[in-house]
Amino acid sequence: MKVIKYNFLFLLLLSVYPLNAQDANASLFGLLHMNEAYDPPQDILKSKSVVLMDVPKGMQVEERLKLADELQAFFAEVGIDAVAYFQTSSFSSVSGMQEQIPDLILMRDIKNLVFLTVLNPENDFILGMGSFNGKNNFYDKGATFWLRRTNDLNTIFNQLSSRLKSDVFQRENLLLSNSAEFFEPTVSGFKQAYITLPKDYEGKKIAIPQIDTNPFAQPGSEALSIEAIASANAFKKELSARMDAFTALAATDSTLFQIIDLENKNDADLRRARVDYVLHYIEANAQNVYTFLPFEKRIENQTGVLIKFFLRDTRTNIAYLGSEWDAKENWSEALASFITQMNSMNPKKPD
Image (cartoon, rainbow, N blue to C red; front, side, top):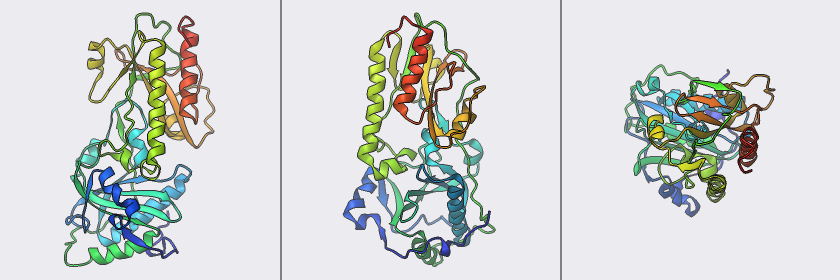
């Protein structure tokens, strides 16, 4: 892929400002549980960094990769060793299944986190730099971050370049790659998938994962997402609607369904709680959904975001996808379709 020099990234030369300089953005530090730093981390040019990116759902893969390579080209020029890129959405894609940064990444002794949230690919970006905590939530509560919101990445790159080339920062990183390298989280998946459903739920219990309806409750990748930053109230409303739907489902049969907080719980914990199955869903780009959930004789022609529900057996770690491929673009429709399949296998259960 041809790399475009960072100083030609965008033509608009509009304003760049510290987030706390504008009343509309001052609350972001509080929402993200961050403190403001005047400069990027002092060791940014002599240590490794990880990059977390979120781009609009309509942005094509080629456009995202091009933007990442342009960002990486700038990093290489100034001396920031960005060794791994992740998509923000990848860390909340599989509900109720623990996702981790791959060990091969953590073994590289990464010290800093860089995040880029693209609110609008034409004229609205947020770029931040701070300490990486080596955990799945990327940074600690109260961490100090340098943040800027800009209409034009080229302008902020020029400012950063001048600052990073001053005597304040000692550059030790050399011979850096101009190409961004993306990685996927390591998901604690399942042993195998069956294109069917359990035939009898009598005496069984299905855990429904608790949904955190506040994306800013704790530091994490979700708080750095476009939905949380640009439309916090709408995002909370969507999460609350999903939790309400789960609550309503549990109310239809409290013997079968139980809402459980799955944080830090493994299958042994669930079996001790007499949970037989867990209701999961994956919400990701279509290709990731197709890869994660194998299913014979389906048409793989969708390119947007898909949601697919499935059951996982806590004893065998086998996933049950249903006899029909019912992935949907709408979360509520995907849930309703899967519950319909479950009810068809157990007609005595209420709709």
